[in-house]
Each structure stands twice: as C-alpha cells, then as structure tokens.
Length: 122
Ligand SMILES: [Zn+2]
Image (tube, rainbow, N blue to C red):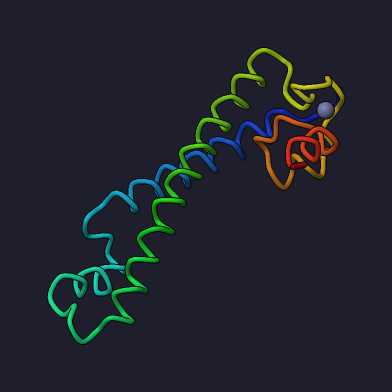
C-alpha cells in the first residue's frame, strides 16, 4: 500500500470543515448572500406565484443539500477512522485497492469503483 494517507488526512479535514460550514449556512436563518430571496417569501405571495415556486424549490434543494452534506460528513468521519486503523484506501466491501484517482476526487470513498457501480445498479 503506497497511499499517502497524510495528504488524504489533510484533504479530509479540509473537506470536513467545508461541509460543516455549508451545513451551518443552510441552517442559518440569515445566511448573508441568500438573504434577499428568503425575505420575499412571506410578504408578497399573491402576485409572485412564480417566484414563490422558485423559492420553494430552492428550499427543497437546501434540504437535499443538508441531507447530502450530513451523509458526506459521516463518510468523511468513517474515512478518518480508516486512516487511523490503517485500512484507508481499500474497498470496505471487497478489500480491493481503491484507485488513487478516485481517492483524489473523493477522499472519503469507501468502495472501489466496481462495488460502487454495483450499489448504483437498480
Ligand atoms: Zn470493492
């Protein structure tokens, strides 16, 4: 195993912070830049149906984002755990090495590409 776990450890911590910030922003009632859009929802519902629909859609996307972010957070923590116990970089399903390029793109990947494809098959 020639994986540079130090590098991935740093990448995971960095990504973890980024995801945590993203979740914090989503949960914040006044998330700065997105403020204006949100403020309009309550007051002018009548003649802004289209805008309201868009705002609702945005909210749903936010919920999905939060769910995904929470999931990624769990996967990042699991990956950090695998660095600790020395199993980082091997597929948790079949034990094969996970391709370095895949880890570069997604440091918290726990499955090799073949197993990942299997889980996505209907
Ligand atoms: Zn596998």
